[in-house]
Length: 514
Image 1 (cartoon, one colour):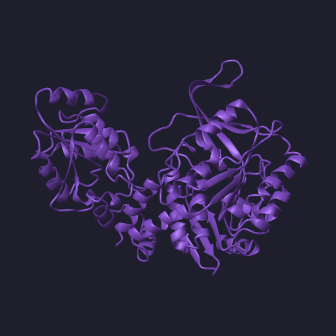
Image 2 (cartoon, helix red, strand yellow; image 1 turned 180 degrees about the vertical axis):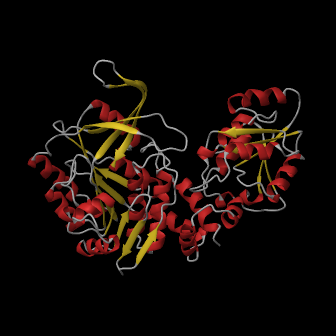
Image 3 (cartoon, rainbow, N blue to C red; image 1 turned 120 degrees about the horizontal axis):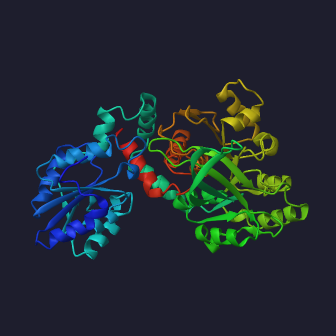
């Protein structure tokens, strides 16, 4: 959109510095402004009265943390609406999730927030204190204004088709039992848990290439290199999710002794969390995917993958060492999350040890190209206090192509003597069963997918925390689905599902149903 009021982010800092040299004072308001309502108008008009110029910074759509399906209106529409207001002098679109970068960009004399932010404890993101420090760093002052308060989220969800009817019914069911404050207290209680994650540590490497066409002689696909990125995958990715909610967490795994692997692990794992056994004869696992550049609004395209994995599983002596080390620590934890990728860490004897000694065993036994048909949950395990699996894993577990998903999940749930069981079926739904054989079904929260890799791990991380706390099935399923919805908007495991983003999204979904 072209407007004399719209200032590009990359030029904004210098632009506003030049304005200040003219002895013009600036007030700033920042937010999403997804649906402009009377409360916004009054807020902006009050802010305008405080200074010569009013600058409104808005969060770019790729960084909005209001839950799946938000923002409802795209960047162009939100910018155009704000530019149309007489009281607004300038608008800047900010390519960051928080306000610190927006404040740094404008450096206002007066930064205005709604009166509901006066009590910093009510800010679920916990970022308001950083905002205050940034404002004061540049010599500005905070002002809490607004005579009328509305919620764009409430208005959108009650009057617009932001979610399918079945999904809104599910949100309504959850919110009828727990308001957001109660929900937040439950999430905060996860911090009490001592968690051990057992599983294969994987480096997920993404190489982005642009396909140029076929070579003239051999008809081989030719591509141009664009970029490389390495991310923490496997059990390490799950640790990053869990750590956001339960900081007292450790990782038990097996790796090689390669220098590059040690340097990579050190970036993501604190020494106190590191229970990894290093073995020179073991190859650290790397999964190298070649992908196409991302297109806005579309899932990334993966061309092919090259896996660095030992052909044979660890020796018997190494497996004994793994078992002996694990045996010494299991009783120190409230929850043991097993991420069994079938890459050699978890031998038959280690499985039996986990089944017999884990205080609460949360299991995710995965099928992948390296173990297809050989790492089936009910062939490998006899007990799991909770577990989650996907459609392919269920197909292998029940040995059928056509079956009743609920019935087969119930059979598996009983055979493993579980308290909770979940079957995630991608874009179809997620089914859950608890120890009373109560059942729950939820459609996916997010329809716009960037990358499905890592979403199942995020789901498993959250439902495992719920299961050990013995939370109701529908609430646990809600949390797992929300974690998965956040994860599918992230490329691979580039970022964890943060507690602040999780709570902010949950607040948007639950409060609008009250």
